[in-house]
Image (cartoon, rainbow, N blue to C red; front, side, top):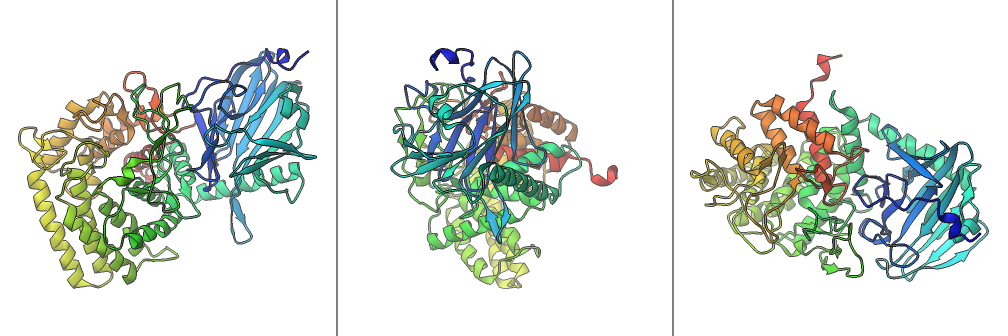
Length: 610
């Protein structure tokens, strides 16, 4: 019997969806679908070549450029998937029609060893039989150069090497190599281990290494989670969000990626497909702020290493809204025409043109991202006078540009205005510099920045207010509504009980909300009117409602957003208000931030129960 005819009892791959889990170790990550198939993994780092790309290319891996790492069960009937509690270790159970089953454990090793965090470029997969004598098929298809190149495969005694021009990967395994190479189904009688990573020999046996890596990685994440200061309610949701944010850190430089993927459309067929595998200073600030609220400040300390390099590199001038995770300034945008895209909805973009934009809110995001380092005495490296002087250069840019047209935080490519949100964040830069100056006992500098902030605040309140709409508009002198004005209370710009802010919340509810969900803005953009709701905007609305005293309504919307998560507690960028389906890049740090912020804002206090 041929291998082909012996494979007819194996189900076709699951349709692409965002019902996926993420594993990683603050060096790289991988996405695993609900049946335990690795469908996305960029190496050697987040913004690298996707050696597994089936998320964006759904054809047969034998005939085209799709690549994945699948462990399948014959006569598949059902799957169950969960994270080991309080860790980034993913478990997937597959059952066949006879009730026989297997369990797959997936993780990327991360633990403290030899006075540093050990985080190798290694995927570990362990599979064991649960019931009966299940038959499985292991399919490891690797592609390089965005699917265009197949590797040369060489074989050792217990390993396979996948040789490419720029990267060579080694699979060390105690599974039968012949079955892997031929994709021959076989009966699983014992636990098997697969370690895919750098082309290096293991220091110990395959099973012993996999077992040790799992034990140490589980221990690391449990200890990390144990130190979080979490709210009383929604603890599981908060811990999962926090772990996901931590996984978005590229620890080598301190950068924080906005998402793990590129080109998941913001809405079906919209062509709003962007590459989010870079560090936006805006998104990174919100990640740091959310983790700080849980008393997890080590991510901030790592990020400040990256941010300080951005500030020094700018030399008091223009700062880009995003950079590469290795501080790359140029991120040229290209289209991978040979890839069909998520569910066939291209284009697949690599790079991001937004690095060319002028988005003036960036100056506020820089200062806000660094501000806690001047106040927090727990930090190993508190900021001082030298760091303040560098931030003053950023503040001068904020003062110069706050009332100048820009692309805005939504990165509009064909329209420039004096965006309220950009002016607001420039105000925040000056306001926080004044507060930092007081901590550093610099009264003259404090007065200087406070004066800037006062004048900017007066002008924003005057020119962003629309009498016609009875709301703060998206731009000076404008009339269009935009959810980003809700950040006024996030950064302490206005009293949430101010009648103008309450009126703005009411106007946004009427014009931007589809039930509990909120869109970014009402005006058409480069692609027309947005179809899906932007999750972080919904979370901003939750925060605003809670602060103005409508806590019951805020809790109701938060419950809806928790239900919008996938089966593992993860969110993408957007939610379709009609179907409830997730769209946009995944997992989206902005959205996971929203879960933490809402839970912290709405939870009953601990002393109400203990």
